Structures are given as structure tokens and as C-alpha cells.
Image (cartoon, rainbow, N blue to C red; front, side):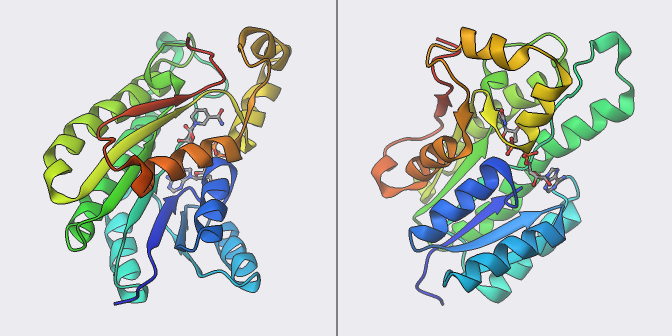
Length: 250
Ligand SMILES: NC(=O)c1ccc[n+]([C@@H]2O[C@H](COP(=O)([O-])OP(=O)(O)OC[C@H]3O[C@@H](n4cnc5c(N)ncnc54)[C@H](O)[C@@H]3O)[C@@H](O)[C@H]2O)c1
């Protein structure tokens, strides 16, 4: 078995996922960049490898359990272990749409990717982790996991659901060396964040005025919270939802 710890990040080819991949790589982890955008994930892995890091890309649609299963088989084949999983892949409800106007297909893709994707990833990650006894999972929810936003009903439901899945699953495996927690980012500059900001003129300024920190956050600030939750420094943190939002929901 490889001695190096291995961290998987879903949706790892851009935004919060990419910042997380880079942070784990810089801290000595072998990183697995999993993304539905396979070519983009491969480019990230290539760049990290040329900088001397241990990186591996895998194409995976987290809403398909078969994809998730074969990703785990692939990780075991390449690295023989999994120590950290950051279940970050997700989609937003942009542009905003009220419930009476939402087609069922959009409801299904939001729940399949954001909620079932996390369920499916944890279902197949945990059996690999039970072998090493000192592992961590961080699920990426949102401030939408703790408060509602008009026009984001289903996104909000999925992000609340992630916190429920996190708490109950954390209890199932707390005694078996797998710590499971969640992070709830506020408004963050990423490709997803930028799409939302450009869909609603004036939103960026309104958020800046509303957020106590006076600004939106950077992906690296979320990556730091994820890294801490997954680290031995957070060894007694179990089933927690860490809000990182510049005070937005305070
Ligand atoms: N940016 C924000 O303001 C913000 C705020 C709160 C929560 N979040 C959450 O953080 C996470 C990352 O967001 P981001 O802003 O970096 O988004 P992003 O859109 O920039 O990146 C998301 C990544 O997930 C990948 N992805 C999407 N669907 C996938 C699927 N079915 N299978 C595998 N990969 C898939 C995308 O290809 C992309 O690389 C999401 O879960 C999002 O809901 C973001």
C-alpha cells in the first residue's frame, strides 16, 4: 500500500473543488480530481504533475452510481487507499425560478447531482475508508443548507438534505474511524458564483452591502475550512456543519 495519504475531490477541476485539490496537493496528499468535465480534470492533473505533485484525474458523473462505483475501483487500483473525500460536485438553480415554474427535469437533475451524488459517493467511499481507520469526509453544502432563498427552492432543499445525510451518516461511522462533516460556503467567486452574479444585475453590490465582512469570499477560503475539517486538528469534530460566509447568516 502507498504511504502517501490520498484525497478525492469531486467537482475538482474548477472553483472551490480546484482550490481544495491544490491545497491538499501542496500539503503532501496524492489528489484525485473527479469531474464530469473529464478533459478539464485531466488538464489540472497534468499541470499539478508537472509541478511535482501526485495527481490523478477521473471522469465521473456523481449522479450515476455506476460511475461512482467505477471511480472507487479506479482509485483502489491506482493508489490502493482513500483517506479523505471531499464531496463537492454540485449545480446551482440559476437563473432563479419559483417552484410553480420549475419543470420536473430540473428538479430531478438538482436532486440527482446535489443530493443523490453525495449519498452515492459516501456509500462507496466509506467501505474503502473502513480499512484504514483514520479517515474523513467533507460534504459541501451551502448557506442554502441553513436558510432559504426565494427562487432557489430545490437547491435549498438539496443543501439542507446534505446536512441531514452528513449528520446521520456521521453517527453511523463515528466509532469506526471515519469522521464526516460538512462545510456551508456563503457567496464565493467561482465559475458557479460568477454565473449567478451575471444573471442578476446589482446582485454583487447587494451582497457586498449585506455581508458583514463587506465582500464575497474566495474559493481558497472555503478550501482552508475543508482542509481543517479533514485534518487531525479536527479529530473531535463529528457531524458538524461549518458555515464559512463572512457573517452572512449571522
Ligand atoms: N460558489 C458559491 O457561491 C457557492 C456557495 C455555496 C455552496 N457552493 C457549493 O460549492 C460546490 C462547488 O461550487 P463552485 O462554486 O466551485 O461551482 P463550479 O460550478 O464552479 O464547480 C463545480 C464543479 O462540479 C462539477 N460537476 C457538476 N456536476 C457534476 C456531476 N454531475 N458530476 C461530477 N462533477 C460535476 C463541475 O463540472 C465543476 O467542475 C457546489 O456544491 C456548490 O453548490 C458554492
